[in-house]
Image (cartoon, rainbow, N blue to C red; front, side, top):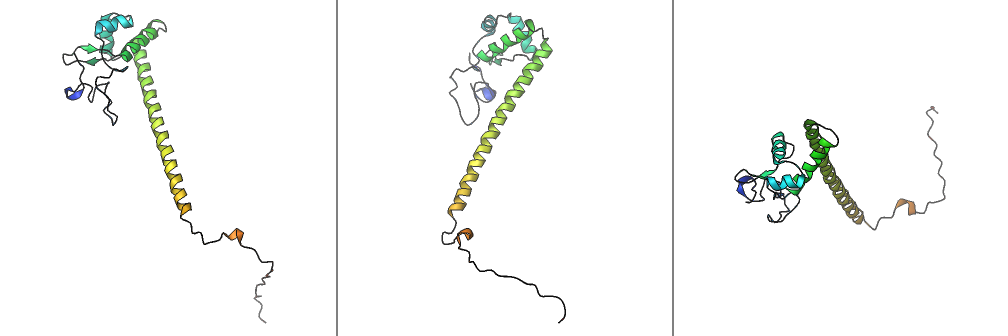
Amino acid sequence: METQGRGGIPGGPGSRSGTGGPRSRNPYELTDESPVYVISVAAQLSGLHPQTLRQYDRLGLVSPDRTAGRGRRYSARDIQLLRQVQQLSQDEGINLAGIKRIIELENQVAALQERVAELQAAVEGAAAAMQQREAAVHASYRRDLVPYDQVRQASALVVWRPKSKRPE
């Protein structure tokens, strides 16, 4: 069974496998975000019980995609996140509310890093455009004018004396 995004389109807007952006991908291309694993396989791959996966879904820790029949479909990234939740819970002793907050903050950091990269690219593009415009201005200078520093200075000395304000 295929997973569907909003509008019932496989890999369409709303599904994690389709970007919905200008770079459209093949909806049948498998990526780390392609929802392909049923809950029993995801439980086996993550080393958790299927009921634990359902609980994590209810708590919003790991939210898999859903099929048209409302069945859960986990991606490789979901499996990785399940393992991370298990490691934080068992090895680090962090409660599920803390783990949820950690995941939210990690997602926020990733989004901010992506935004910084976008802004850096925009600044670099603006700088390149500015340099092109500056080069165009320099190319448009008149060539028949001579810069002042190249004009030979005369050796004559002119002394300026202000008129005195005394009546004569």
